[in-house]
Image 1 (cartoon, one colour):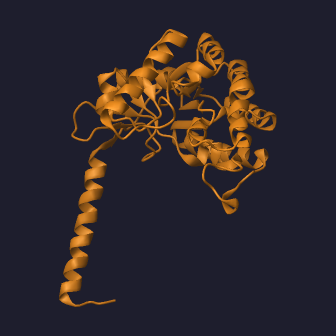
Image 2 (cartoon, one colour):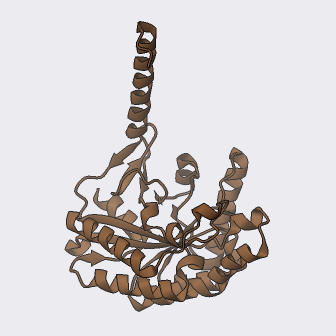
Length: 293
């Protein structure tokens, strides 16, 4: 490595630039210390489902064999998840693209009747780069969800701009995974938006997605549900000991398979066996934090 003065000066500038960038990024996030949950609960566990039925694959015109997985999620998987959540009296959050309101409206209405939250997951599972088109997509999604279930969404799992979300009355986002605890997102310290973080280690697609989007053979995975159950249980145990928050991300076309439904049923029973576990919707968590903190 060249250690001449000019090289050292360049390295110092690079390090300073990295530190400045890290500080700027850190300033946009504020973790909420010492969150307390209702009725003395020790941990809040959000069960969430991304009900996209492979819309992005439709846009990319992928083969019918791939699209059939999404069809399974809309025709079978989502109903199994609703039944599972209802059997445990869990209030889940279904993150739903606007297009799904056209494709599978009855499942969304059934979920809403059971008290589950229907939240935003973009119009067609992508956020356009063009500002006006992004605004159009968000407005169409809001209108579609409200027309289908009678209530406007207040949360999203997307990369829609914070300012646009706040403009349309959103109170939380569940996309950024910079921390394991809920946190505030704000570029300038004003008008923060609450983030309910999830992590890909607690995302079914990372474990059960054979032929994942754009992946080659070396990237395929089809893990034993029993193994995933133990991984997620260990993660829950850690969160439970520390006290705090956990967000489990599922997809109806992935977790809606019978073996995985059975695994989730076992996992939930193990969680319920411990005292002080709260299973709210993301909206319930967000409104509690906003009101209390």
